[in-house]
Amino acid sequence: MDSIPLPAIEFKHITKYFTGSERQRAVLNGITAKVSPGKITTLVGPSGSGKSTLLSLCNLLLSPDEGEISVFGKPVSEWEIPELRRKVALVFQDAPMLQGTVLYNLQTAERLHGTVLHDPSGLLERVGLTRDLLDQKAQDLSGGQRQRLALARTLANRPDILLLDEITSALDPASVKEVEDLLLQMNKEEGTTMIWITHHMEQARRVGNETWLMIDGKLVEQADTETFFHAPQHSETRRFIAGEWV
Ligand SMILES: Nc1ncnc2c1ncn2[C@@H]1O[C@H](COP(=O)(O)OP(=O)(O)OP(=O)(O)O)[C@@H](O)[C@H]1O
Image 1 (spheres, rainbow, N blue to C red):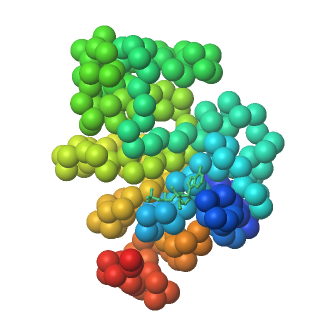
Image 2 (image 1 turned 180 degrees about the horizontal axis):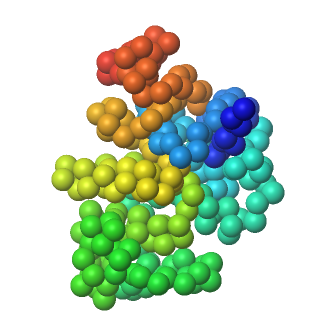
């Protein structure tokens, strides 16, 4: 009998409150879901629906107020934080660069985790940057180049799970396609699990194996991407896909 693979990430009844000017409100409200290992899960939803907050809980940048998150079957609270963050890497749009050269930025994982970066040029080339950039100041790179460097810096850690928060939203269409291809290749060749937040429905259709819709801190729909776009269960999903959600 085939054994069921352990979820890469499991959310169990997750609730997170933030205190606004008037009152405390639930930004995440009872989220229960499993992220399939080796798959790309695309997370979509209106602005402010809680997508980034959900990702920030996975490597303990934030903690839930209620519920539990497990990574490969172990609650995040039981992980050593450096080990958790090596395995579960979060890449933001406009990730800040460290002052110094491109090489110095690539060596971040060496300094943090004591790992050795054997092939910085190869790592750059993997994200479509040329090795002659190694000695340039990271801050002088273009927006697209910085986003690729942020990805390369993260890949130096060889994470098992990549959490990608709108990483292509500032890129030109050709660069978007290159970054998508790179991530699809990593997913295929190395089995890297990914959760990808995007506001672009075409990108969600192209990239994800599964698509989740969040609205007002709730997970409204979770389905394989084909079903999500062609036969969603919920009227909110149909309205969201049609661009009617305000
Ligand atoms: N540190 C914080 N303190 C208080 N409120 C916060 C904090 N971080 C986020 N929020 C609020 O939580 C809600 C969800 O924010 P979050 O960034 O997770 O949404 P999102 O779906 O990722 O939005 P977007 O698509 O615009 O990036 C928002 O209303 C936001 O203002």
